[in-house]
Length: 293
Image (cartoon, rainbow, N blue to C red; front, side, top):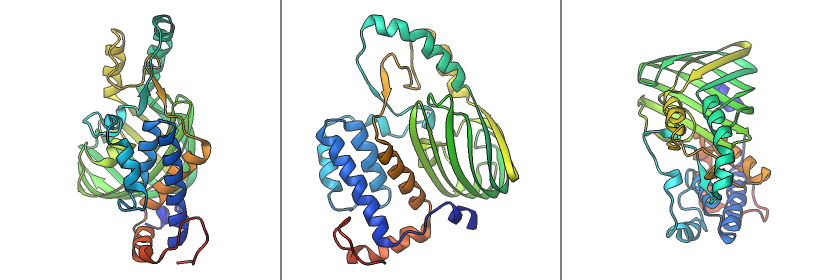
């Protein structure tokens, strides 16, 4: 798992606490603006590392009476875009119909060219039928799902899987016009579509291939769920929640996107999580200075 470690900063427990504190402040800021979806995404990132983090319960209380379906698990998994609902007039919806259908078409296939280091191979007919193995840390440009027609991806993979069973670790980050999303996986045993990894980031139902040899690599993937979304979109049914006629990306600052990326990296490291939890009770007030633990 050294490849994954290379992608994860060597934070002290106090530095992890600082990142959590900054993310909590961002969640509180969005909650105060009644931007509930943005606050929810940030709060869930904190919860994935420390469900008892001071101040998190108050944010969740503020979200309790609001719909949190955007981040609820579903069989569609990562195919369901985390975009918030917006009201648009009929003329705007009509004008957006053709661009939405074009975007749906581009979401059917994702392409990636990357560079980094490692050796990795991945062939899959959904994640129930897959052969994966190796380790890599790479960054690349490509056409990704969730309206990120042109975007950037950073990812690290390590492990092996055959069919729907394996031991596999992953951390990834994608940013583009459609927004930002992160994902971490630390799976062992049977992999299922409701696993968080396949809800946050990877398409469990995808069919594709990806390979890295030395310093370069590429990947391509077909998304059957997006085929259905495109066809139903022709009659104005949006199963992927990604049409601009009634939805918009979450409004996150660049600094907040960076925080989500860093927390995803921290969450992928058992060593960092153990270090933080071991020293949690000793930490001073976040962001006010403190010991190096």
